[in-house]
Length: 91
Image (cartoon, rainbow, N blue to C red; front, top):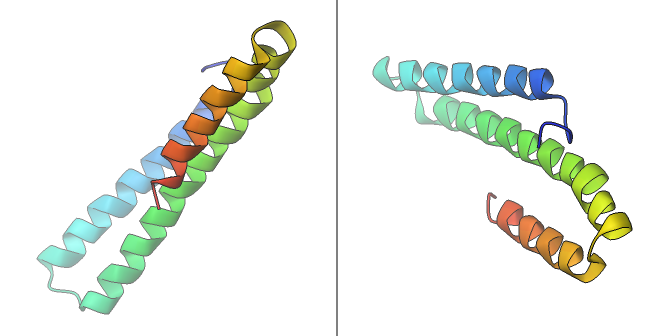
């Protein structure tokens, strides 16, 4: 996995999401209006989805390419299809 993506950039994104989640928790404690909380929940969900996209793109560019070029193409494609299926369930 480390070869597939920019780990520091992903970690930075994940830390921002952690901050968003803490902010949502604080909003709930402070009795902020539901609409405002929902806006922040959607923002965190979108940010997490973007992390998933980055991981999936890295997987495609490195692991899938390598599997097709140097391994079993059919198996590699089947595994990638499964990865896409898992990712699409996130929404």
